[in-house]
Length: 494
Image 1 (tube, rainbow, N blue to C red):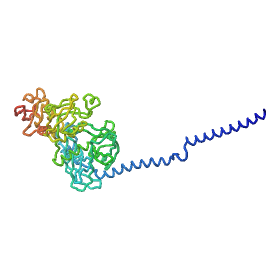
Image 2: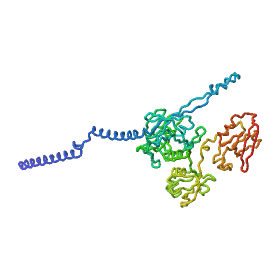
Image 3: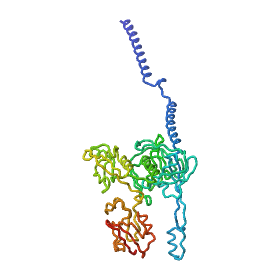
Image 4: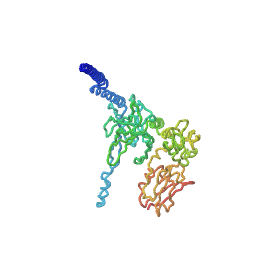
């Protein structure tokens, strides 16, 4: 028995050894199959090299775009001559208070230089920039990347804040014009210009948004911007007029505005560019006609929100938020809350589409407009009107109160309020001082002044020029226009 037990123990030990061997082999097999092996191991140095190679490819792509575009970007210096007193006005008044016989110091001309940017759009010497860079300058000097300098002749569009500068040169490196309708938020954006006079400065960002609208009073000009491209590419003073480009090196916008605050004087990551499609039309108009002729229909519009789309039963178009009485849209029967989906045979996807198409339609042209009203499509006929020109770009600032009344430019709102024909030239009386000589002579709000002291009046600027030398006791002679007649009004200033 004992021997039988011993033989059994030996056989059991052998079985255990075999089982342990199998288990060890299985364990090694699992470890080799599940853990990293020399054949599949990741080499940190190889990974770093691959990542750097990808970054170098991206970097090379950006540098090639910039190298391609830089020769098309110019620096612009605008020179203006300003009249200023030899003694500051405040100090002069204080000084003469105690020394009345002290002679006035003569006005002396002061030279003012401002700096901006531009982009060559035609090889025969046409450069696109902002009007606020070159408008009103006595001399405009353009410097190319290769160092050559030229004097430029300016063609202006103050309302849209664009200008074309013509230099006497050929064979210039013109930039390729893109299509701003294809621009999407999130796409790369590169800004090039001369911020603070630092020529050929390049900044990189993305398109932050599209379709921004702004109105800005710039001294005596009211500038109107529609469909602006917003970008976080750094834009600073001096970048104005320079290009915003995409990764194909195409011009997609003209850098124009920055949003700032009282605490930060420079860039805060919010800049705006005029879309190239708008700039193309303005450029063509200025080169061919010397001025910009824009269509207008007299509506305020907006993009469709998701709730609008559900409410009006349409997914694309421009929803009408306001209609100007007596203007083209009103005459055609367009109403508030109509959605314009087609204009002159062209599909309208959003408000910017409509703005660009209407502005590019010749005034006086009759077109079909397809609207959606009460979830049903309807076709209307409309005759396109003409947008205001430079005279209407002059901000509606009031004239001096020394006259006993104030005047403003004839805006569409004032024309509607006082029942003034939209084609009337002059200024409209908006306020009259009670008990003044002006009131006693019959001056009242709503009257249109067309002449002042034998000088034609077309806007506030010309009115102020005709009356600025008047003082108490002088006679003011006005030709005023009513609905039916023109009348001479004459009175002595209080």
